[in-house]
Length: 302
Ligand SMILES: [Zn+2]
Image (cartoon, rainbow, N blue to C red; front, side):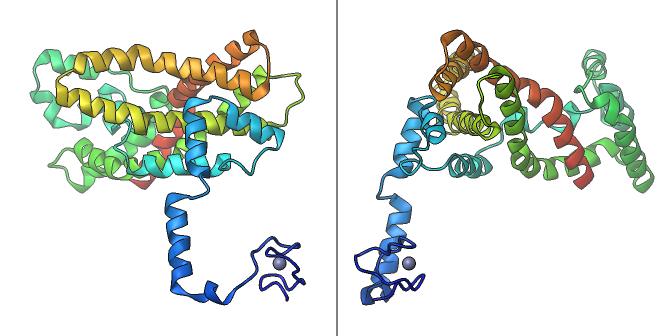
């Protein structure tokens, strides 16, 4: 018998050279294809469910096993991260990752190009004009003004700002979701600094960052968003607000500390430092690099 896949001689059920199961006549049938389909959906070997459980409930275990070379048991960090991203694509957007144009530019620019602002009560108008925008707003303003001026020339009657805002919103949702991967390399650099002198490969920091960020995304998709929806239904918005403000940061911090401690097998003080640095870095990167890059890409496409 020869292996149908690689041509090596086969003695047992599996090919010793490439690992494929010996090709049998029944593998050509529709039944076989249907079984493969069912297996892909339900993941009969349990790897998907096992990995999800470990990611959510056993911080750092997946990273530790990956680093130690125990990899076949688990979904790869990349697959897990991609899965979290795919789910995130279908989930309602998280506002911090997808701000409207109004929050990206200084209030003075909004007031200048949106005639509707003039009609607002003085107090509302003043609070809009006082908005300083984002860290990048100062640097990107000439570009925004050029775009707005072009829209004014096209349609002098309407609100140039409203027109640009609409185009921006359409481009923003998907771009924002596609670009969240940008957080990962920067978090890996933070881990590199926190773990300096321990002789780690950079890829190991990337793996820990990928797992951490996948956890954050799954937490939002599976807990925060459904929880917020339920709270709204039950009229418990205040409780949900408190949970978001205190419980969520606490969960992200505790998870980070345990994940780092388990993944790197380091002492508690270093784990605390690096573990708490993870959510802080995530927020800092979000406010600086991510928002600026995302804004530039979306405005270019809008
Ligand atoms: Zn083979």
